[in-house]
Image (tube, rainbow, N blue to C red; front, side, top):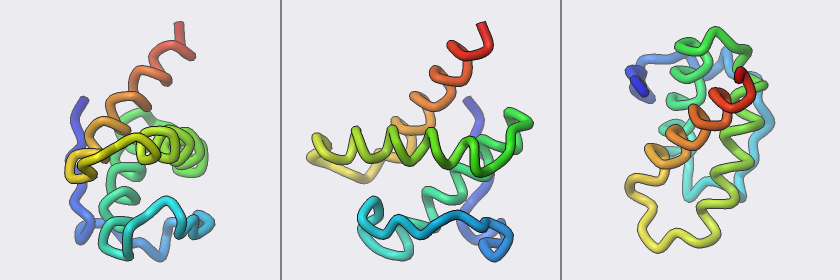
Length: 89
């Protein structure tokens, strides 16, 4: 898993995803997760909406039980990669 984009390196205007505010602590948190979504989509050669849908479903599941949210994006990204790998087998 290689996530290389940082929140300030992508054009967030290009990400036409619905704003699911209840998933994110604040705008900074949302931008961090969008950077991961864009990076995964780029690396996997998949459309951003497809990755965002999967990522946000997993994020919602993990956020419910998470006590510490600092590395939630890393765990979600790992699960997204696992999900994509299973689908391609």
